[in-house]
Image (tube, rainbow over all chains, first blue to last red; front, side, top):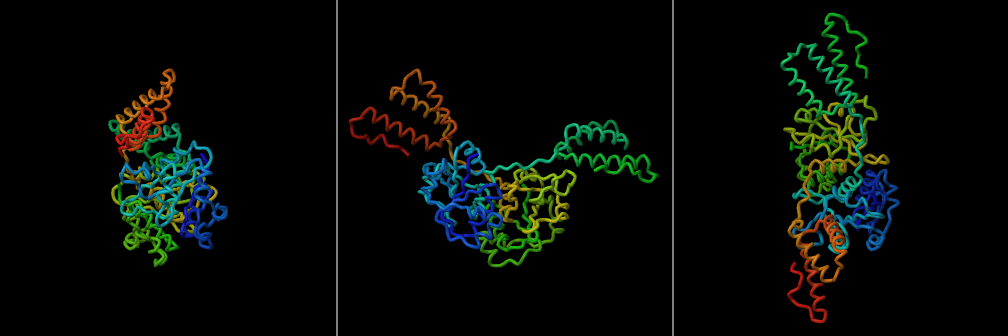
Amino acid sequence: MPEIAIVLVEPMYEGNVGFCARVMKNFGFSRLVLVNPCPLGSEARARASHARDVLENAVHATLAEVRRESSLVVATTGEVSKSVCTPTRMPYYEPAELRGMVKDVEGTVSILFGRENWGLSNTEIRESDIICTIPASQAYPILNLSHAVGIVCYELAGLPRGTYRLASPVEMASLLSHIDAFLDEIEHPDFKRENTMTLIRRILGRTQLTSREVSTIHGLLRRTEWHIRHHDQPEGESDHDPC
Amino acid sequence: MPEIAIVLVEPMYEGNVGFCARVMKNFGFSRLVLVNPCPLGSEARARASHARDVLENAVHATLAEVRRESSLVVATTGEVSKSVCTPTRMPYYEPAELRGMVKDVEGTVSILFGRENWGLSNTEIRESDIICTIPASQAYPILNLSHAVGIVCYELAGLPRGTYRLASPVEMASLLSHIDAFLDEIEHPDFKRENTMTLIRRILGRTQLTSREVSTIHGLLRRTEWHIRHHDQPEGESDHDPC
């Protein structure tokens, strides 16, 4: 991925600048460029919270300097063209598409966000390479500046969810076989067995159990089996849920 | 899709509540539920901006009431379990997965967002059906409340980008044929032709031109052809870009 610069063009409210720094850092971005911003003081720092470093390292630049130092300039806008005959704001892409579009760019990709009241000017948009619009409700399509920055950063980061260990095919087969044996234990009729096992396989298939969950279900089945076999004896120590 | 309720559990800052209302409306959601919120005054209304209706129609409820009226309860959390042996926060899903998981649910899906300082309690999480975590940078994974609500709403809305008319296959074939004829005009050598046309097809293939763009390129080619053929005559009126 190229370096991503978030460029705020003449932001009017310092709180928004602070929030932008914070949400950038939330998604792993740190290069904040400010074009003729409002004065930044304690409110910006408060909103930045643990992203003061992003705020303090913000670069002040003109749009001309931004363009000169960028391999690609993306203009974000809430207003998209209604007509194919006005190329200024057309064609436009959504944030989910941006990542793929910029991933092979070398150098810096600068993403411009306009003023809180009227966005980017037609000239500023015309001199950008790509137009990006966040799909929003017609009833109220204008996002707060930091929310727009957040969604673009979220999509550009494309961070992995992280993984948790789902039960392996071997573990799942062992669970199904335990369930099958359990159905014997409760004298589930043979003629229904195939359909019931298919139904259970469907449930487990879409549930995507973790190893831990499989292990707990084995434990519950074993405990139940013990009670079926020894319904008049005290519970054995050896049958506790192993997890 | 089911009705989506955004449930803020004991939010501490009225500005955040207002911002949440705004970003909900941005993505077409209107059902805001507040569990024991901070007092809401002018700052909440200011942050809600044109989403004051969402704020004013917010329902006050207890978590027990929320659970009673929900078909499914999703707990959002920034802290995910490190171990498969602690099922409270495991397994977890990311916002991009939620839409598919809830789309067939009838009734209301309530999405809980916790307090700004310590989120949802283990008990609150334990009594939820699904855990959702926004993948974020390890360096600073704690999002502002309204940014988290915004990203979840953005993903749940899954709003279409809107469409613009890309050039049809017929229009693209006509452009390629015009370019081929143009190469004749500039005496492009035959032995290079096939490779050059393939290269141009590749460029156009990944560029995804709109109808308007194709039309403008035709116009530019025609204008150029006219100048090649009549390089000593004044420009003809009939050759102007038609768009």
